[in-house]
Length: 114
Length: 114
Image (tube, rainbow over the protein chains, first blue to last red):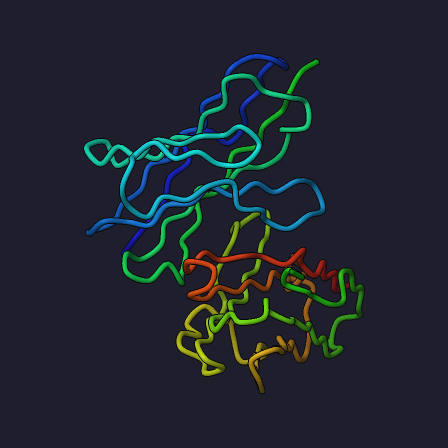
């Protein structure tokens, strides 16, 4: 069975600082990997996804993520955080060949200090 | 394009009442999902439809929950009778070949059962 671990429940960074959110997955084959962001009172918005090809994936809002098969990781990064990035971030893994069903991590809450 | 549309956005109901949540997927998507989000359990997949047919309902918590998809543009999730522990945010999501099988979420229905 597939699973996703986000080891950091809560992260606080200062505005302008760099950010890395960790995600580790467990899956027997090549996974489909996603990062979603959820602002308070809102639904989940897709930031980026990895299906195949280049292991460094660019997303919206200046985010990127790198797929590292050897480490079973798909960490999310941003070089300079903005106050509007404060939200909860979810990593998810789907079945290769069909990204229809996702297993979500427990989420990382990001606080941005002025 | 309109995204996934859910209604109601917020509902407060008394224990024992019937609750019906509604969802209109993105046009052209052939897969539809109902997720539940709580603080304790995070995001859980309740049920998944493909081409209007329920494929996996193993996440439906108990017989009080039922979901239908009478056509490609409409789905309902019903709770009868509702209980306080059903209080959660219920998300509908859809995907299809025209979205690269990426799952897009609605803004959620925030349910409070008192």
